[in-house]
Length: 479
Image (spheres, rainbow, N blue to C red):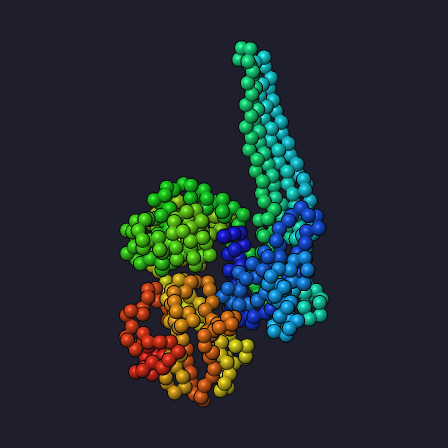
């Protein structure tokens, strides 16, 4: 998948929106054109992706996808038009819309060239080097859809510089009556598509952060956004061998809870280790292959890297050439390595328990009191891939299981993904939650690292959404 320098910032914004309990907002976007025709990329789709990545846990934004440009109509849009004309479909009006364009593309703003050559009676040499830079500017604004006015102050204007460079070497000479010639070159070009994605994600963070009035700048000052972060991690990766990479990732997975405390003896090709790596990759939104490559190495160890007082990236508790944690008295000044750091969990520390966040999503001031018949909407998230079980007790004390059920039979859920109870974004949610008779009702969710279903009593293994005999209240499940 495409991972940019702002991927962690988008996840950070998602957590900010969830902590702020931001209600779901409908949003859409105009086409984001490039009038210079020098950057032919799908900028609008990048906006949609950025908004989606900021809404995985918080459900902060839902994108209204409707196209009125006849030249861009496809099967979905044609069917939508037919259904709208026959009153068989209804679109919800967005509250906000994104507007803007690729403001400019200035090519060759910097062009450096260097050529040198030598000549002799039987040998000629030549060397050339060139480098040129292009500046791309993107401007986005946030508007009020109801009045079609741009909201003052909700704008973003950023630029990025991309470079192209090349080197060439020429050799020519004579051997007796015969001549020979040799040429080798290397060209390097930074893609404009990745540059536009970076600008779009930065602008989306700025616009939504200003609109929601959350401290979005916290998500733009992460160490992972440091321009040298990827390069420095790659240098550390190249210092160690494959066995060291596997050992470092293994200890990181133990600290994150993907492996047990006694799993440090597992081999890299063991099924348990590869499955743990695969679960970690899935939770991080990476391509799942179960292998310890640089992308997995970087994702597993990036939480143990800070920006030191000298402005350099510093490892916390680990070496690039040894998988064992650093002793407290072994870190040397200037070595880009410290044993501990404030606010950072130590490398090799014991795993933390699974964190489960269960929230009421109803847009009401008091979310603890409801009238009989009111629909109730809940959401649950887990800190890492887990098996999730949810139960509800009615006012009379009857206990039923909400998850897993016939619509969602799998108890396994991924991290960084919201589980909605019921799934109000699905046309077939499977069930609805209504406030019942006067009294106290409760919902409890439990997350486990392994599948607990075979270990449960027979009564708790019965069908979902049915009264469980012999159990009264959610507290009885814990017992």
